[in-house]
Image (cartoon, rainbow, N blue to C red):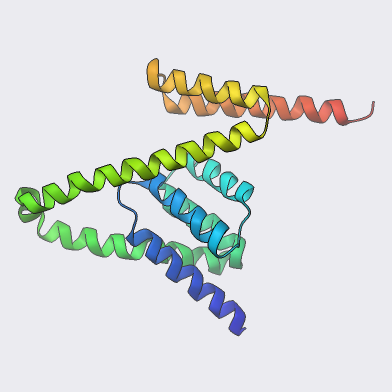
Length: 189
């Protein structure tokens, strides 16, 4: 019982701290979660973290909350999900509530504007790190189909301005088709 309580406290505390350091959106937290849950706590394997990332990106809702639900459930069931989500949303809710009370003062404050501008550079670096790691892991599979899908998806979204949802759904259909074909090959007739 004490071990479970410690795990739940560690889960809450780590999600709270990650959430406190996540400026710039959901992609930033992916890199931080990987460092925390794969490298530091060793609760997840790198492949599992990639799966969590893929699921949370394709599910509706904020990426950090979606990831919290999955990681929390993986660590401690439904209670773990609730604890992880609370750790993730508590601080942002408090901060946004305070900011909303003083919105006009924040909006016109030159120091706040400069701070936000500077944070964008850090956020861009963290997102770039996530992209590089995801691309490396796709390349590690050595599956030509996956590498081609990654390149074509990049071209479609960045250069041709194709909807990200359309790209994700297309990749999902190709992935399921590939899985079915692979399963069919391995099944004796």
